[in-house]
Image 1 (tube, rainbow, N blue to C red):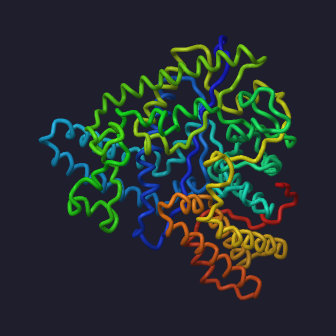
Image 2: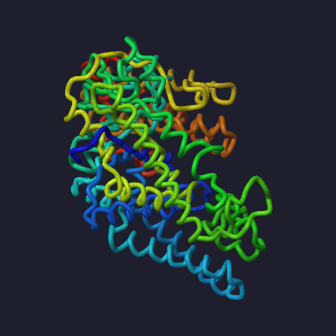
Image 3: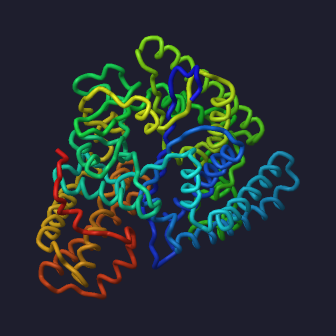
Length: 535
């Protein structure tokens, strides 16, 4: 830490995708979610962070990896599918290099994409052994990155606490998943959608979690009101520290109108050759003739117009440099002011979805790289740290209870509980109560019965994913989200009937173990914990 440091900046990247596997078929559109994000976000972020470490840059950053994402990144079936996917992208990019050879503006971009795709395949196979978790583990060992985890299937916990054991199970399985992948304990825990309800901290404490993050109003509306606002953590009575999101740093990056990603020089997300070019030309590289993103995009944001100008890579990188400097300048002034009115060094907590960087905001990884380098070499006002680092510096903090909150639209539960998705909750609550009943009744099951109980727990957890309710609200892939919810609930219901009627079908259990193979070390007894307190 620099001697002149007046405060701290904690950048937190939360990486999550819903669990989509389907081992019985490759003929599903939703598989592109993981494949395109590996290419556009996870590999570029690993490249940036590894480059910083290799250059001897001393920095700290927090990365949250959700259990569904960890499961998918370590799945051999999905790893092979990514190789198949990126190989098709390489083939398409080779064609694009030839097709655009006459165009002095677009041809260099086609070459850029070809190089990016070749690089992605090379590092995926050679550097990371097809498992990107190896890359994140290496960064954690280097001391630059602090890895934390999240709930088992990213369930929105405030809408689950009618059945306390469901909250406990989501947290317990999330922590166990992290432990199985990294052979260490997570210090922090990302509450899905930053969804906090009083009492959840007690469950976090029972599983050894030291801190979590809420949206701004979760801390600002705490009882009693926090002395330092969101610029210092508060301790719940359980001993878990809660950090609140900073509004200013969030707005600069997230805001659709004022945020950096909307700058006219940056690459436009929506213009893609999958939509722009002749269907017969792109057909071999898209899903069953359905026009989708290929990852090859030649235009920049330009403005609120359909007449998009051609993307200029160097101009975009220059703008990323300017924006990195602007973000740094704003944090300097912000922290300098806070330090002048507080009796301790403030921490500015800046959490973002990792997928914003590279996928939605193409230049995001470069912006992050420039920001970290500038923060280390060009200013002395703040130091980049993690929440754990701050708790070591300031062990004593105010005790208060955060308010119920989320970082969703309007700040509470409206995204996940509304007229588009409210029908799911009576079924989820009923299944949760039934799972608790099973766990209490069959405490010492073994053999086939134990396998059936473990699979029932998996199906319930998968049905509880917050992604399905979110998709129903946003209206993007509604049929898929509804189908996934109904399928997992249906499988749970069938397993419940088989177990309670003493007629467990070994073939049915084996089929589901193969089909929904998340959480290899699942232990259904998490639904009958010794101590539960989440309300």
